[in-house]
Image 1: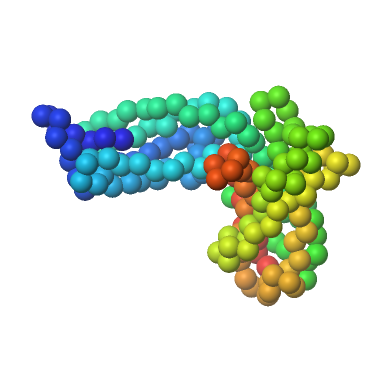
Image 2: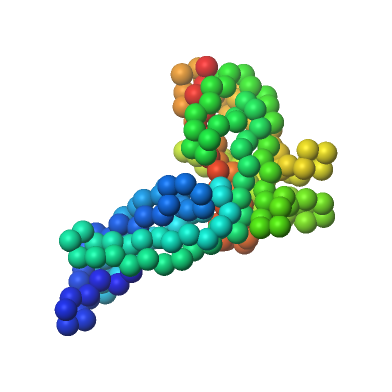
Length: 189
């Protein structure tokens, strides 16, 4: 968003708030801010939430006004499989010694990504599982029987100890472009 004064001159050091819907298709997080630079421009790189659809993002400057623009999330992610089943950004309790599969279904406007397309996505590492904070990431394989992308989460090899809190995130990629994301907080017991 460009912020200018009455004469069209750029205004630096202005905080711009960007807000998307709190339910349905939107961004994660739903609200973020950026400060204008010398050219009066403020921008953010939005991350899609797990819902498919189009939505309006409102960029606003306190006491001045707002403008909206339209974005579309092309891919959505289902809830994770147990024991990681929680709302997007929700919390689950998992044993430190876990050796369990985290799986997720990826869908577009036509339905779930399956068959040869899903296999190609797995081979191309388009769906990744990341332990946020440590940055450890792995490509998720495709389980044709479940119709879901899956990866093993081994608490011992990740160094999980009782009392720790970790976040696991699944991202859908097209090259370097992030197309979808879902995250869960894990309380280690």
